Image (cartoon, rainbow, N blue to C red; front, side, top):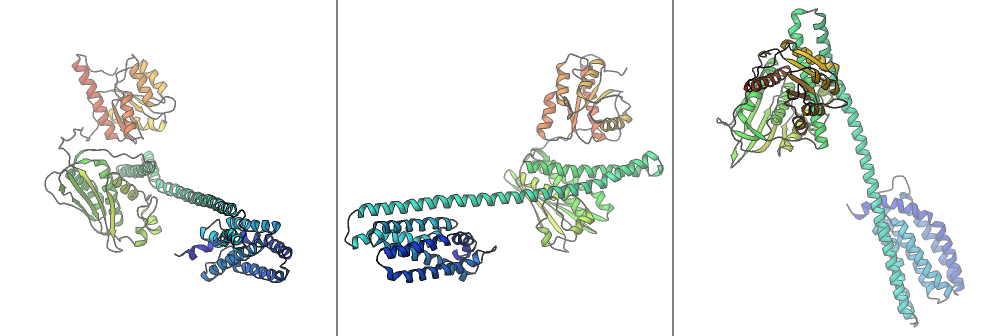
Length: 592
């Protein structure tokens, strides 16, 4: 792009400014005609006025295309406009120099003021471009420099040095003023552009939020509808033979809703820069085999084959975040199953070692319809689907791939895709991870059925009635002696009056929260000062969980509470308490 190509919009502002100066120029032309008369050059007056009017008319015509709402970009029009500006400055600057030669005090003053005024008007009309300023103001600067020389040519050396220094200082002052005004103008333009950009971003963000709300509202209605319908069927007991199937429907809908909420939470964390990646040792083969086993049943139900291809036979121990890796693989396989009508889905695993690091590559290849080039551009955008048809057909919030890529980048890697319409797609997670150390498998409680060694007394503390009813329903198979409290104050009162074996403590409650309630319990000398406290909350950030343990809780569970994990936590709590009481020579606590 040349200088001429950038002058169109700038000339728009200059043209509007210069048309305002027309009356002043006409008045100045008349004053200069009077000066010619006073200087004994009356014969030049008709020619001067004629040329002044012609040049002024030419400038008006040349600048006309730039006074429109959309300034002209035609190069010839731009050249003519610049020529008219140069002619105008040369005409008035030249006439000022002629008047300067008369050596008449009043006329000399008029000449100097004409040059000064010409420079000032060009500061205003050339504020948008240095090129435009020097085209219009250059002739005035040139004639200003000639003034002392004319005195020397006339043989008048009186004050020439002072005159030269004054002219130089005046020119420097004008240039300094222009430079400061120009930079201030540029800063204002940039600030305005930045404000407009931020306004546009805010409007886009508001539109995205509105779109997000609409998508989330629509997508959450599906599992909520399934849960409500299934619950009505079970409550009314109209189809007892379908009870197990209905319960499975409710469980699947709950898991679907939990997955959506997790994606929303992860996306919000990433936007706020609050997402963290853990680092612990894990075995790669076990992770991918467990993941493949988990998805084999959904794939088989759709008539698909899920293949696992691992390029090594020996165990590969890595150090990283296996939970987030599994989350990415789950998203990719889930999408592959969703978009593949028939055929094979392949999970390929490669982890070549280089010194103390492994270059891990996990690739999920499907045989779906593939991705069009248009959809590829928005594939990793939040709340975006490949097309409107995809959104209608498959649903979803469109956050899975966005979250997966951001997680990959937080790990120091990336998530890429290669695809062609009609040829399926291959999503590849590539990340370098350090070598890990082999660890023993974590022991756990067999989840075949909820069993406890004895009947225990449990206090469930939660500010929501539905949550308290849910806990009561989940604990019903254990036949525990259950008491509930709706806030921390009521919980502390019950704990001061009765002995309990376990406390289930909601972390986020109004008034005093679960952490503060636990701290006060531990600081007391009451019956339950050392009772196991199992905290539970929707906040799963590492610092939030650590705050629970720091408050004195002995265990922690995420919301929504899964029955199996709750049973395991109760088993750990009562086993530890019974072991402690046996070691101290005291019998285990018995229910009254």
